[in-house]
Length: 169
Image (cartoon, rainbow, N blue to C red):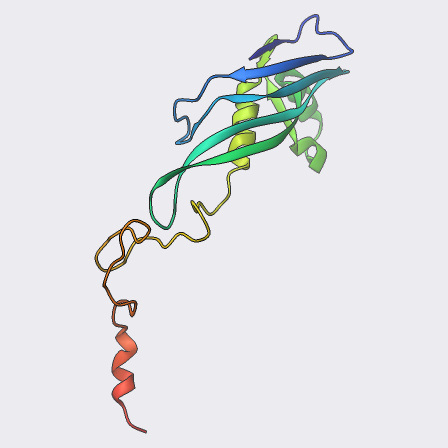
């Protein structure tokens, strides 16, 4: 969704999102994105706030099966013109923590899609597990233990230190 900056009302504007599913951008495939976004102008800055919801298709780290993970995320971003940042950047050398949260845009418009994509990516858990009770894949035979039980022993591969068990003290 492209937001035109010239002539943007100071009182702000609210947008309803109904974006179609993504095509695996950045290795991530998600369903339709819905939500509400409010864009306000504050001097030279644009503040973007809102909430989004979608489902993300992930692959389980234990069993390697695909599953859907619901995402509900708050969106917050501050945007400023790249020209203004260049002017300010030429004068100052040190960035404050508030300045690190600023995103820049070029020209007379900015796109909300990269901001929304970033929030979706940040909402994904680090550990992808389809369920806490997932049994995973057998390290010996490679069977998915959620689908079929395997008769392999759970001892795992023999350790290089297993010869030490034979030593007598």
